[in-house]
Image (tube, rainbow, N blue to C red; front, side, top):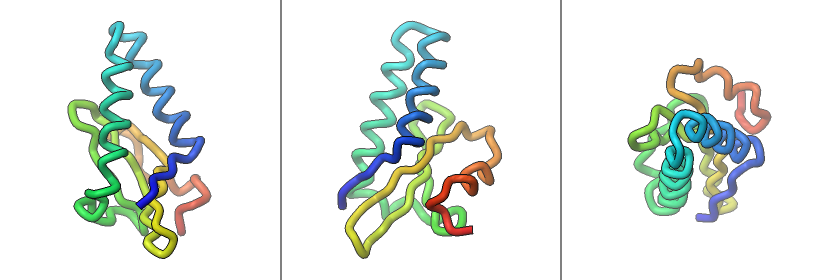
Length: 102
């Protein structure tokens, strides 16, 4: 499976990284490394993350309160990461992202 990270998700990751860097030097880099490591692991583990909302699967980031939201497109062999949200945010926010079927 090929992983595609949408520009909106990259922006989510960068904003969270910047926030963590403001709190503690180096924490943003640790966060970003963890996120990228876990997203990369989806190639072999996406099936371990059940569908949580509509056709969306979520993966909790270890040691950080964030969920990666992604879609699996088996027909074309891709995993599409479209958002990264803090766990305190309302999950309905992702409905605004165009790729999710309402």
